[in-house]
Length: 214
Ligand SMILES: [Zn+2]
Image (tube, rainbow, N blue to C red; front, top):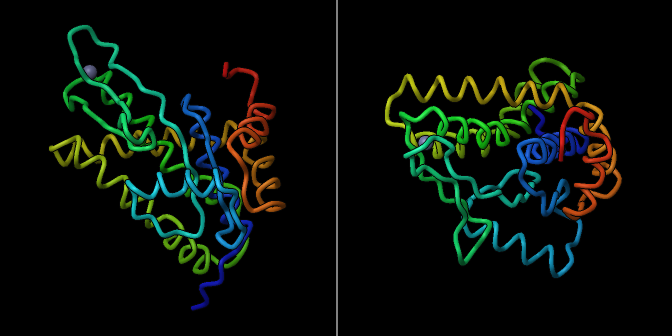
């Protein structure tokens, strides 16, 4: 079976992650849809810092800066923070029995699902079997990361799969509601292969639906 990397699919995948990060209130720092494009010194530094906490090897990647959040339920000490020495490293301290904590986790996981959700929605071309193979290849890193995060936060198997279902549904809702932003990002990525966070955020913000306040 051919494993040709379709540039447009990769761009769409990374566009999905970027849009979801923006919708969830995080910052986008760097989007790479073509590993052959040379990076600036600053971009290279971001890449190395991000790599310190991930073993991702997919065709592209989106580097985001997670906004630190405390659980809103009184008495709960749940929080999403970042490492003081590497702000790209995320620390999750969440209570699986706290609804507000699981809400924070759902949003985080929705961002990771968003790449696959975006290509699924916007790249209907090709035969079903090629699509399925491409999808498997493109999303394996994301799915592994989701497994790692969810099993680190929730012990109960049923609770884990319920949270993943909810995150996938939320991701689909975000992505299908923001297709203009997604298409704008995809085009920009097809054009350049790499986008600085400031540029990506501007593109996304301009095209986001007016109901979002960012
Ligand atoms: Zn909580």
